[in-house]
Length: 376
Image 1 (cartoon, helix red, strand yellow):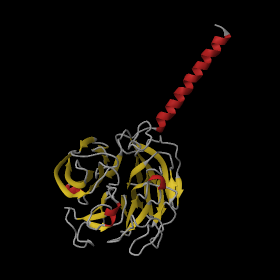
Image 2 (cartoon, helix red, strand yellow):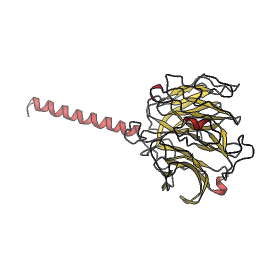
Image 3 (cartoon, rainbow, N blue to C red):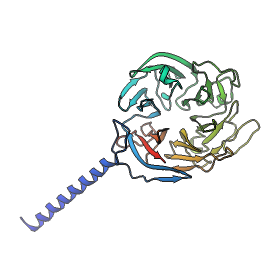
Image 4 (tube, helix red, strand yellow):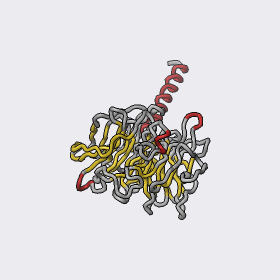
């Protein structure tokens, strides 16, 4: 064997060993917990980050290979329910299952969106879904969920204007036991200021869909003047916070976090950002005219709000001050996981999901994924 051939052989072995090492490292970084929610010790390289008194631990992947997950809700037994915009309700965990929801029309931003469990779910098994139906409108449906099956379908509210974009879609039960629903302006800005329309609003209904007696306009409307709100969360004092998409296109920006109060008008499309007008509310925080968050889900942990960003591709945090105002919004994990939408806090962990398969992202291997970070 010539000396030159020996050099070639040694070089080839080195290349193969290096390739195997990099592949092994990549496999470690994408370890997925499929059967139970327990740390593996093998996590992506994001390090703990101190955020005004709260600490997020390193991030680990919980589930992967999802298609545009929109909402995450935990069952009492610890399994996770996830909606996929195309029309699937997935149970992930120890009793995994996929349920296809009928009559879902998924196009653009519409489809199977919000999910909520009844406050007395352990006794009545009621599960609520927000979806775009085949005629293009949006509605909320209630089911009994048992043995990985949905039965006793009941339409809670229907006829919410829909479009390919601006469909809102978040639903959540408040401390008062009422169901709150975010709706977009369905690409018709005039509807947001019309209290007789269900579009561009935050709605509030009883668990059976009837209108509570103390609603401000004698209909389901709780607040108005919204463009495309996609997050709902209550803080420790019972105040309701919502995230909302601001203007889009070449003038994209002025995304909002709003403190929602009964009967108030949040200005769209008349005012944006720091603009004021009598009878209309400024946002508690906004992104500014040159920055886009495209905020989606929101949750609270202590005195902190955490919300996800789609175009902003970040997890955002902002502290609620003692006087009820908001501090500075800070971005965490920027550009690390792509577009982020669903978020929830459960048993000491902050869970959030990517939305890179929604037609506007750049999917990577395994997308979309659900991640979690320890909150200490």
